[in-house]
Every structure is written in C-alpha cells, then in structure tokens.
Image (cartoon, rainbow, N blue to C red; front, side, top):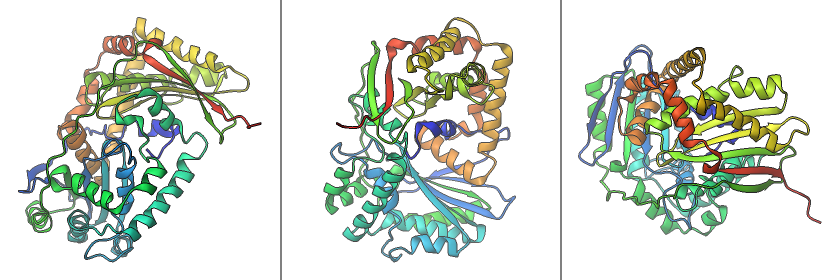
Length: 438
C-alpha cells in the first residue's frame, strides 16, 4: 500500500463500486487463458485498456518481499519493441494518460486514450505481457525509484502505520509483510530471480484484460486476439498460504515512529475476506462509526468532547483476511486509553442496540452515492470490472452489489459487531514518537 492509515478511509470503497444503471459487458477467453471483458460506451470518444494481474505483495518468497510492487515500476522500462524510457513518452504523445498500482492481492496497469488510439493501448499492454526487457540496468534504475518512494511515503509521519498493523495482526500469512517489501530483499535479488518471478506470475492465464469505452465490440475482439493471442500460457499459479489462528486474547503492542510528535492509538481486528457477507456488513459498520463529519465518532470525539484530532474506523478489504482498524490521534493531553475507551463505548452500543432507522437510511444513501460516483467514468467501470472478476469471482457484482448492501439489516449490523469487534479479538497498538537514544 502507498497510503497511510490516515488516508485509508479514502480507499474504503475501492473495488466496491456499482451504479444505479446496469453496466453491460461481454466476456470471453483466449486460447492462452487470458480473460477479456469488454464494455462499450460510445457517449464520449475515450477508451481505456487495462490489465489486472493476479499477483500482489502476498506472493513470492518471503525472503524476497516487495517483488510485485517492484514489477509495477519495472514493467514500464520497455520491451523488445519499445526502447527504454519510451513507454512513458508514447502515451502522453498520443493524448493519453496512464498509471499502475499494487495491493497485497493484485497489480493493475491502465492507459486512457482518445478512442482512435485503442490499437496503441492494446499493443502497449501486449508488449508488457509478451516480451518486456528485464535487465540489470532496469532493475538498478527501478531499485532507486522504489527506495525514493519508500522515503517519501513509508518514512513520512505515520507512514508505517499499515506496516505496523500487518506485522502484529498476522503471524503466518504473508499479509504480515509490507507491500513495498524490505529494501535489503530487493538489493539482494538476482536478475534470474526477477525473470523467474515474471515467468511465474505475469502469464495471460493469470490476468484479465479490460477494454472499455468508445469501441466497436467485434473490431475490438479481433484486435485483442491479434495482439494477445501470441502470448504463451504459463503453468497455473498454485497458492497454499498458511491459515491464521483466531485471536482470542487482547494483544498489546508499542511501536515507535521517529517522524511523529503526536502519538496514536490503533485497535486492529483480523476479519473474514472482502467477498464474504460479513465483510459487507463491516463496511457499513465502519461507515456508521466514522464516515463523514456527521458520523458517531466524529461528532462525539472531535466536535462535542474535543478529545481527538482525528478518528477513523476503516474496513480494509483484502482477499484472504480483511483488516478492521480503529484509529485516533489525541487532542492535547488526552490519554490514548481514553480514546480507545470512547471508541469501544460506541461499538458496545452497536452490539446491544439497533442503530436508528434514520442512521440506517443515511448509510444506504452514502453507499449509493459512493457507487454512483465510482462508476461515473469509463476508468471507474474498467477498474470495477477487473476487481470483481479477479478478487470476487463475479463480474456482475458491478450490477448487483449495491442490492447486497441494501439487503443488510440493522439486526445484522448489531450481530456482526457483536461477533467480531470484541477487545479480546484484536491487537491494540500504541503508536508512539521514538524517544531520543541516550
């Protein structure tokens, strides 16, 4: 992850998008196993080509963490037909924009072009998949890029929050390691290891291609086959991650950050993965607690009691286990234990009382608004289609997931809060300024 917990609330709905209107799409597979999803929308002369690979921070040797994030950068270096550095020049020169991002579960690349440049977008992504140049010059270059990103993001104030949560909340699952990985692992890696990683995870049968926007479906199918049909399938990726044992006793931890002056309190829970119904309910719980200035924790701890500078409840979606975290920064000399007790008090109310009908309706409105906004652009639709296919196993959730949220009852909210959010099921972290060494 490239965000601190302070901004994780902004990520809460990534991959949880749906619209009030039905999104039409068509799916097919190439002979090499590449799954393709097409969405035609001719209202604007824009097209997006994107590829999501089923590889993320959790994958690979634990003595070589950070490879997926490293490849997010490395695969922009060039290919047999694209000179080094030209990839990122070709796109803007043709009126396009591009980006990529990596999570613990997947890596996503995309380009947005004027619709008459569709073929260019397909060629670029096929070059990345078919024959990228992975050499020592590129590895050394991107190693420095990743180190600079770590300095800017992870070494910034509160930048290690998510890393601290992961290493204390998980004991055996690879979610325990940060997405960016350890720099010493990247330094020690050989060129052969990087090539082996690409060969294992970046095959067509471990990816989904999305083409969305101002396209002709039949012409696009032909172009997709022309550009991606030559890519050879790879052996199936088999995962057998170790399972975590449930937390049954509160774990208390102190962590230190030399870049902060104000301490923080975190209470983190390891919960079922994002595709489970309970995870949807926990989305609603986190939004009820801290989704906006009218939420219960914001009104109570910031507006009324003036105990906190910020307060958040975040349900971070992941495939194998979600992370539900409470977070607060104290105002003045307010004790961290006091902040935690105030947050726990509101959760205890949820566990024994139904939230009001008014608050329940507000939640429904918030979710519907988020979903409509998320799919208001072709880029948002493309990301949602890829996410639902790769991480949820059901592309049509883009049309049905909002109904799932609407089906959640106030009784379910109470019962799920009671089931998962007890103090004996969590890790409590005091995140403190590092003391000066004597």
